[in-house]
Each structure stands twice: as C-alpha cells, then as structure tokens.
Length: 424
Ligand code: SAH
Image (cartoon, rainbow, N blue to C red; front, side, top):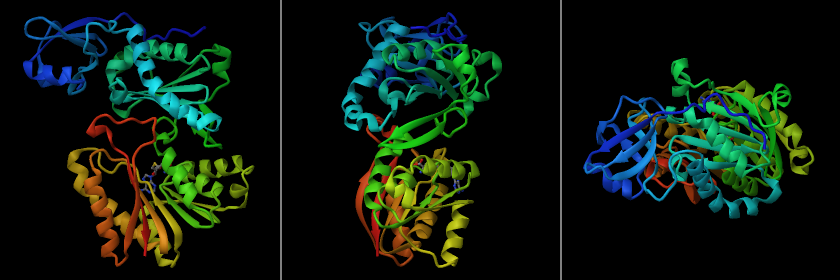
C-alpha cells in the first residue's frame, strides 16, 4: 500500500536512562510513567522523542520508551520486557494489535451502524500521550506528548497497515504542543492532513468527514472540531438517552454538534432544544438534523438551537417558566488542575440546581462530567445535594462511565461519569 512517509520520520537519538530504585517495582507492575524525580542519570541531554532505554542501578535492562523533556513524565514507557521488540514500527504494530483485539467484539456488536471509534486510548492502551480515533476512512492521531512528534508518521503507517481501508490521516496536537517552537514540531502542525490516495485526493479534502453512529449520520470536522472532532466517549450515554426520550421534550445543555439531541429525536422525542456557547456547534447540530430526516423521529421532532452561555440561558428559561421532560447536562471539563476542583464542584452544583429546576415533576436529569480531577465520589454528592437544596427529590436510577472503546486502566484515566435521575 502506498502511504507517504512523513517528514517526521527522522532518525532519532538513543538515550540511556538510569532509574532510581523506587521506579522499578511500579514499572514491573505496569505503571509506565517515569517521572523526572525517578531518573538518576541520563547519558545525554536528550531531545523529545529520543528512544529511552531504561536501566536499573546495576545496568540491567528495565524497559524502553520515548523521552519527553517538556513533561514531568520524562519517559513514556512502551515496554518493560526485553522479550518485546525494540521501540519502532514492530513494537508500535504489536501495541496497536493489543489495542484492537480486545475491541473486536465491541466493533462487531455495533455492526455497520457505527464506523467511528477510539482505537487507542492513551496509556490505557499502551500509548501514553497518544489517542487514535477513527471516523470511517479517516484516522485522527492526537498527540498530547512531544515524545510522539518524531514518531507520528511511523505510528500512522502501522495503523494503515493494520486497517487497510483507512485513506486519510489527520494529526492533531494538544494545545501545549501547538505552542512549542517550530524546530521541535518535526514539520507537524495541528490539523495537518495526509492522504494514502496521493496529493490529488488531499487537495480535494477539507478535513471534514461523515460517519455513522448507531445508524445516525454525523459530520465531524477533524481539523477544527473539539477533541478529535466528536465526543466518541459519550456514544453509549447518547444511546441510553435516546431510549429514554420517547414522547418527551428534551433540553440538551452543552449540546456541541447535537449528539444527544439526534439520538433523542430518533428515539421519538417530541422536541429537542440545544444550548451551546458555540454558534458553529449549534449550526452543525442543525445540519446533522437535516442529514437524518430519513428517521421518522428526527423528521417529526421540533428542533431549536440556542447559542449562548449555558448558565445564562438556563436562568432565562427558568425566568420564562419553561420546563422539560428530560434535561441533559454534559459540560466541558471545569477543572484542568487539582487547584480548580473546588470551583468546578461549585459550577457543577449550580448546573444541577438549574438543570433540576428545569425538569418537570417526574422527568429525568442526565448529568455528566468529563473532568478527571473531580471523581464521582465528589461529583454525585455535589449534584444530588444541589438538587435536594433546591427542594426537589432526585432518584438516581443509572450511573455509567465511558463507552467500551475508551478503556481506563488507571484511576486518573477514568474521567467520564454520568448519572441519570428521576426528579420529583
Ligand atoms: N454533549 C456533547 C459534548 C459536549 S462538549 C456531545 O455528546 O457531543 C462541551 C460543549 O460545551 C462544547 O460544545 C462547548 O462549546 C460547550 N461550552 C463550553 N462552555 C460553555 C458555556 N459556558 N455555555 C454553553 N456551552 C459551553
């Protein structure tokens, strides 16, 4: 198969990293983060993406990975066994297979109705700092660590070998990486496009793609869209909301491109109101509704979009004495650091007060949080406390996490939690 080699496939340096003793047991047990303070000595200064070979104090091999001088996690470990291939395409292919194999049953259960999935979920799939999402024939590699910059081309090539039906590649860079000096970026920019079909195909492609999720047709902008273009982690919650929405009036707060809304409409909601601060997202939701009028529920649903700040819009709807049978609240992460978690909890509580006040007696409040800094043991008491304080009684009937293709093997990677409650 033809796939252009990327400018990033430069020969990389190798770095010997001597580890302090405290790092060894966690590493043997599968904790693949080598923090700065676990490093005893480096054989050279090292650059981002250098292959780091780890040794103990007796010079015994302890593992291998990629060096990241910009992150407190200095080495993103990829292997802790000398029986695995050295860092490079053979190891990447092995790790990709390791991520795809356990997902196969989930892919098969979705059948042809869904063709957008997370293929690799960072360190939980053995790729610390790298996410791979697939939207039909397009692969998005999102890099959260500079260690991957020089290897992105090789990793992409391994994916294209494993999944020959892929045609397009988009490289996305986390905000932190986008700000690195150009010399460190290995020729990559956020949203850089590649095509396995050659230059002509690439010129015709703007980075947007249609894909299906449970039969519904969505468009994602893989270059400019949030995350990698869509919030694939909420797939199962959207399906659940769709099952609950029959005959209901639904308010979808933080609606983005209308994911929950389309499912609600397909499930028979009589009306759906979107609220999002982004006008672009509201327009995209309208377009997604138009794309799905083959579904009788979508064609019949009365759909409205409100572009504005969620807190203000909910306040206004309350002042107008509006109420809904189902309110979905799926805010962005309010706590980017541990220090922000108190404030985040206050914002969640405010949203829960506003959200539950907008639910008609006996209706449903769906409340999600994607902030890894706020655990479910803090979030749900804050949400339920706020509902009770505003004089409503909530009966939680379901608590969920990420979709199946977002495995979370570490406590910190369990960021998404969602609660469904009946509000009386
Ligand atoms: N529920 C969506 C994902 C929501 S992501 C889905 O299933 O696809 C969070 C959304 O909140 C983004 O679309 C972002 O534009 C929006 N947002 C962020 N701050 C906001 C605010 N203050 N008011 C309203 N929307 C906001």
